Length: 248
Image (cartoon, rainbow, N blue to C red; front, side):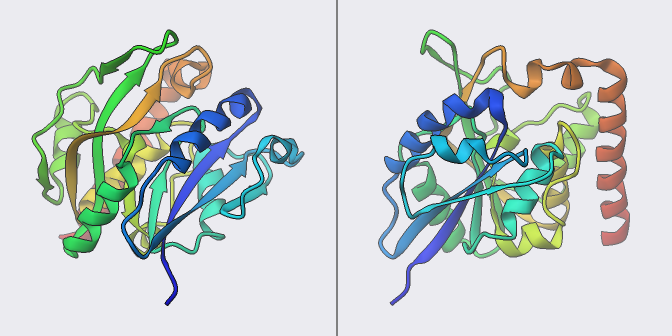
């Protein structure tokens, strides 16, 4: 009997290459339910393919490289090679907590009406300290359709859950066209779109160590620049509103 698969997708570029070992180590430690296995799709946002040399020898790793287009494009390209019925996001500089994949799998197999999950995040500081995410998390439980979008629109474009923890059914992800082709906020755009089409679920147990460091995307000029932020926010909002209108 063949195993069921959860595909973990990681976009990476040169400044984050050295951190892949920590991401991989957190993945190897995952204990999955019986009958399940993981595959790791590492997509280099570059054509040189040099990051492949830094990856361990593991048949579960599927490496790819391509023309630079940002993390959203890289993840969507990697999705073409994914074989799993579930797709889990893992940024190159982050780490999964113990049991993260098992909790996602259990929730999505036990509750077919749920299209995606998110979970609590702990910020991982340079000295190794772990602290709670700066925003207040919701209580564990279902996330109703449109509730994330409503919160985001009415709270200065802030999210009540962290998009870097997303685990989503592959069919839903494909129907949404993958990640938005943006230099940043591509995961926010996907989360909002998924919330328009499907109920979600918030898992209270921490599922991710979110590394805080100078090289992270949210510290770069393309993210901090106010004009660029306004443009990203506008297209993310317009997409969400368009989906809301189409759904009636």
